[in-house]
Length: 239
Image (cartoon, rainbow, N blue to C red; front, top):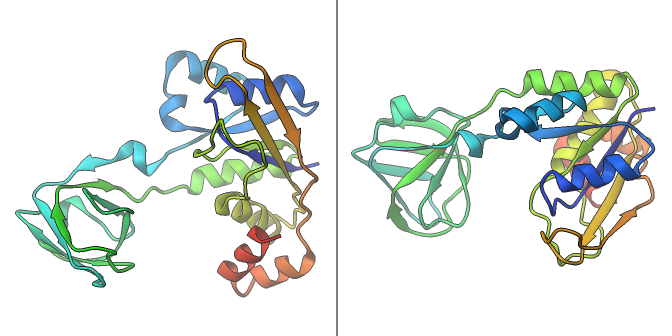
């Protein structure tokens, strides 16, 4: 039946190869569109029925002018900016020097944005825009795969060669499992897997692969998801 395998992402492409050769199930991995578009990688990804994912960070572009942020304020002011043509609601701005991305709630004018959250520091700097990406086609493919009883491999980036334990569940993985039940009445267990490379990226190094116990989502969390998605997702992440 349908299952999601997820874990730390240490070694791009090698992780997938290790799982494919050590897991009895055929796995359809979610892979960045940027990798999918490469000739050799794309050929292999299609052969193994991978699912391409367009990532906003791969589509980022430099905005004109500079942005000024004020700590504690949800408004961003621009100098020589063209927010009306370069930015849309739902996109994110990456302001140089600010520790995190800022989601745009509304474009007020060519030089003013209303943000979804307040700035954590005051500064002025250049910026990049990560556009809002329509992922509906990708999610449709994901749920078709799960409905046909396939095994879905999801490896969010940000793992480390030095981590030997299983990493916490990521929100995106939780949402996919919860949505599969909400939309298609599928109970999808989540199997965490950890890969620890003893010599990092060096060829021929030893690797230990650890599969955790399947995470079975309780019915009460599925019921909660129908009325409060954020709270239900948090409950699942804290299991």
